[in-house]
Length: 244
Image (cartoon, rainbow, N blue to C red; front, side, top):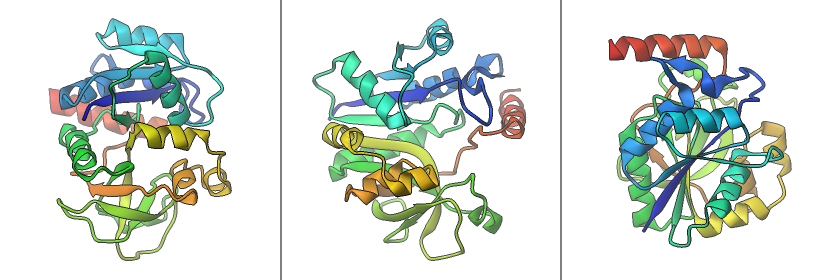
């Protein structure tokens, strides 16, 4: 089976405008993510963006990018437009990486791809163990509850995704990475946004609300997403320390 990785990215993030082009070790966040995806070596990688500045940055740093519409309601809709524009006929799976997680583990990308290939699942994602119980109430950290406890072999179905929760069985920190079969991606973008999705600002709820199962595998550790200026400063320190 052939996998194509598409990374949706835009400059107009509400909490931290211009985020994809912020620099760490003299390289933009979006180009860091592109390079991680390439190093996973599971197939071609393309950034899908509505912004010429992001396209120029990715290409300047040796990557590949494609311009998409500014009217998309979610990253998945942007991914589907990019896939159609690219015109591939022999791709079976689309890997969707978040453009603001430059510390995503290469082994995790590979692991999700292997599980999708072996299980023939329609849609898959990753989660990590919650180490700090305070995270359960942090609405910026998305949680997932799975049917079965996660281990290295388990690819359990998700029961719910939520922003705030108490400590319940099989609850994990959801990681911003998805993989879909082409048929599932097409079906997903043709569905209307669900009330749950709009209320919680979680597009994966559109799948669950329409009986599209999402399987969840365990990841090594949850990467730091860059949502605020504080996140960026903290991650910059970590990544620059590691490379020094």
